[in-house]
Length: 108
Image 1 (cartoon, one colour):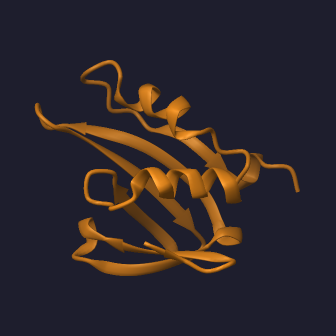
Image 2: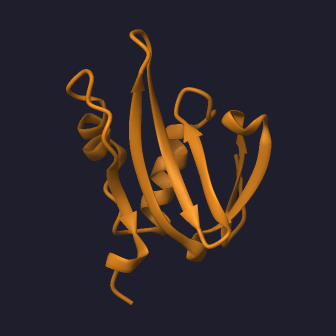
């Protein structure tokens, strides 16, 4: 993970190590969900922009907590990691999307 003043560059393991760059202003939606694989559970954050959607797996993203904090800094409407993580991971078995950020719901 690297950042510039206006964007962040992530190496996505779920996409074969593909490197993608997001400009903060182009992010339209961020949601999170989990996949229960018995042990461990896998938490995935899906980021949607006008150019497409990418999945960031918390277990594979070095610096995921830092990335989540950067999201809150650049997208102030997004809740802090400590607020949304339990909603995604509890209870066991639940696999629904939890909306974390929507540009459509954000004030202009």
